[in-house]
Amino acid sequence: MRPTLLALVTALALPLTLPAGASTAQAAVPANSAPSYVRNAVDDPARKLDAANDARRQVAQLMAFAQVKPGQKVVDLIPGSGYFTRVFSAIVGPGGHVYGIWPDAYDKVSGSDSANLRKLATDPHYGNVSVLVQPAAQFATPEPVDLVFTSQNYHDYPDPFMGKLDPVAFDKQVFAALKPGGLFVVVDHVAEAGSGMRDTDTLHRIDPAIVKKQVESAGFVFDGESQVLRNPKDPHDIKVFDKSIRGHTDQFVYRFRKPGG
Image (cartoon, rainbow, N blue to C red; front, side):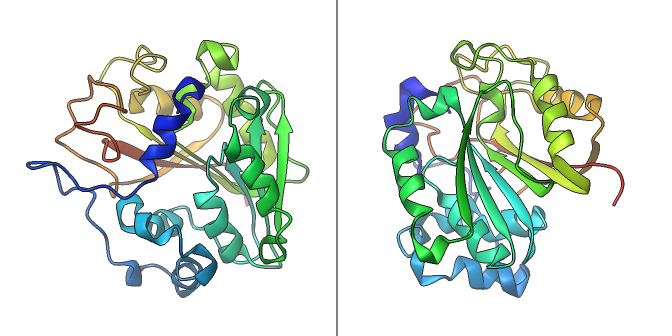
């Protein structure tokens, strides 16, 4: 994601028809394989405007992979339109809590996204949601949490608009915020193998290998990968907003666990 392209990012949330010849790697995975509390959350009538995107974004399978459970404390980091925030809220229920966290660099340019999330937090249906804005270099949570989840945002941390932050320093802050045994789930656009962080500011992609190396160096243990958003037809050398790939980029989904618990 990138603030200068917010309009295009918003467009990513719209239902899409794949162009001829596009991969079906992102075709829906049956939601009935997810736990009942995930299925019930996805079916929440309050999410009716989100439902058109659920198959494309594989929300039920992502939630199952993230191991979100009722009663948990969850961070939706850089929540965008609140798509995942609404699902998290329904899963964790009244005994849990969801922190929608905006780094200040994002909050300043997020436009209606930030305002809409604040409005969401005032809705009694989402009474377990809080919105926090904090310096980009100082990620922290009010209490230890069970999960930190971020989708299509990890690649932004080393970029100029975020202050060219050290992703490892950020990973260490996430590690500190999690309970022992807590999870860090990263979803992002795949860059060419061996490219490291070369394409984060240009193509809005990052090499999965560098993400794994960075997060593990902060003390995390790699805990698994989901294939539900992979697309082998993505050439990895074009911008994620290119009309030929927009909305169905090849995305990695990594889960990391803080030891203990």
